[in-house]
Image 1 (tube, one colour):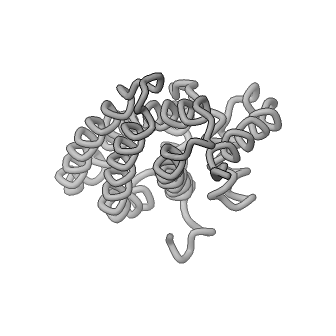
Image 2: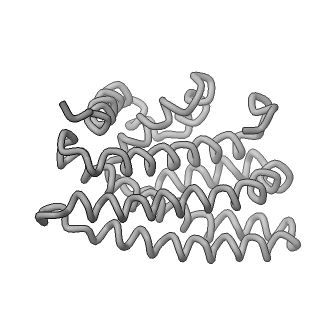
Length: 212
């Protein structure tokens, strides 16, 4: 984490929080998938959330954010192209995760193995991406550009288990950071935040249920 995170740009703060939520969610699926005490539907919602949100996050970077950075800093393009190639590799692991039949007899073992592959790919990818991306966000993306991009991402995010992102952000962000990032949510979503949080807390607790 940046030593001066409290003074960092909104782009850097929101990206860092999104990455921390992805790290937490991928690790949570690995830990929850083999435990019989974790409800089937909670696993399915977390699996679907990860597949949809990671793909959307990477598509937004490849299609919208990378071109903005490359236009301002052409020397960054080779590193950004490398990150896009990593996104393609990660998508292979996401496809494997998405294809697990959760009604099959041995689905938990298959789900666990696919979740490990996704977690390892995501964590490794972020260790490569953040040293490139965070300085670029600070230096080349203006607050106005970020606000516009952020609203576009939110407006196009598929709704699959979206309550989990709210719950994960509550866990990884400070109160001030949560207020900042949630301010970009559409008014109808903000009005429903108490109910969304209640649903997220219930699912996250279920995913952490230990076997008796």
